[in-house]
Amino acid sequence: MKRRTRTLIDLDRNHVWHPFTQMKEWRAEDPIIIERGRGNYLIDTEGKKYLDGVSSLWANVHGHRKREIDRAVKGQLGKVAHSTLLGLGNVPSIELARRLTAIAPRGLTKVFYSDDGSTAVEIALKMAFQYWEQTKKKNTKKKFIAFTGAYHGDTFGSMSVGEIDIFVRKYRPLLFETLRAPYPYCYRCTLKMSYPGCKTACLGVFEEMLRERRGETAACVIEPGFEGAAGMISAPPGFLKGVRRLTRRYGVLMIADEVAAGFGRTGHMFACDAEGVSPDLLCLAKGLTGGYLPLAATLATDRIYRAFLGKHDEFKAFFHGHTYTGNPLGCVAAIANLDVFERERTLDALKGRISLLKELLNGLADLPRVGDIRQTGLVAGIELVKDRATKEPYPANERVGHRVCMEARKSGLMIRPLGDTVVLMPPLSIKEKELEKMVRITRGCIERLTR
Ligand SMILES: *Cc1c(COP(=O)(O)O)cnc(C)c1O
Image (cartoon, rainbow, N blue to C red; front, side):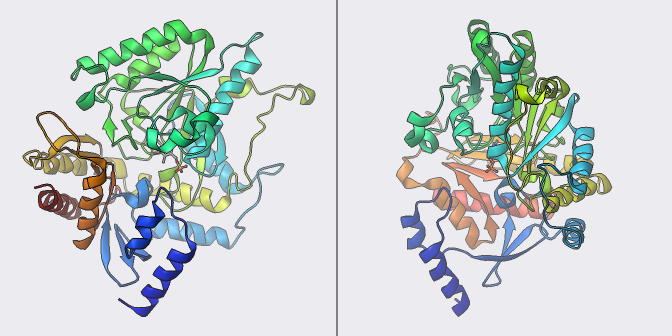
């Protein structure tokens, strides 16, 4: 190992506190320190190349150092790096709002900026809540419905609607109560149904909940397409449409959290597009800037926006904002990201990659410890189980998913698990050869470590 790498690792150990990480374990191993990226690869301080199989945590879209996005950010640096949206406009935030509303599902005409997925969701929750406060005389609609296995971020509001127990358990006394509807995780259906009965049963429970609680429910929040952090749980076709139909019927707002699914991951620009669904609020982050800069957006309909209009002393404004709201560097990166989608016809090019991935994943089905393989577009989750017949999971302390992913690094593939689900979520720009390599390495590692 180079001396410089050694020094960086020591400094990291001494001073950097990593997210979602048991630091005691972290300090016991030598971490990889990334220094540069190029295309679909990351390169560490030792000069070793890794295929970026999780898009740098579900963010990167067209590869690293994409010329058009690099150029846009550099160009903006020659103008101004930051100026506030409080009391001022700025050029890139206006242009991006126009572009986003032009491609978003119908009816979403207003863009509220923030910095990351958690805040995009936090904002949607506050908007939905305040919407009813300002439109109903005696408002009782103060609760949210969310789904089992949901993940919407790490701030208190987004944790409250999330359900992944180990993430939120410690904070539960501080969280607001959320109504919980079953998500059709057909492999482990909470209602003990199999596909497609699982979907129908889940919608049935959801409708029952809406019928009983609509008077107290402000909005329903859902991850369209697939539940990410729960283990890339693909929703059966028609589920999202069903949720939209029922929320409309019972007068409950629908918040679509496309922080992970947005910008092509599912093969559509937005997962909502696959089912022709228009939510009342749409949350975007991760891929918005092509995975370059922390920028997020919450899109709203005119109907919601209008509920916030009034005289100054009615105090109906949306009292929320962050210092870097509408940051020009982030906005030009996002515009360049959308330009690349257009110029390279990214969504068209994806079709072949998605069907190749499907074929390649089929080749893993014979592995005795692979319980379930889930694919939505270019996103896949491979759930490893101790016993395929009973679906019995591995004991958590065996950390099988983690070990498979650490093994993959040795072969030059960077992936990260969710529990014992191995996640494959490459940049949309991944080439067919690289897709093959990614699945071949993954297969080898699963074989070696789950014998
Ligand atoms: C990652 C994610 C978030 C949180 O986004 P951050 O940028 O990490 O705050 C919210 N919702 C979904 C669906 C996500 O995948």
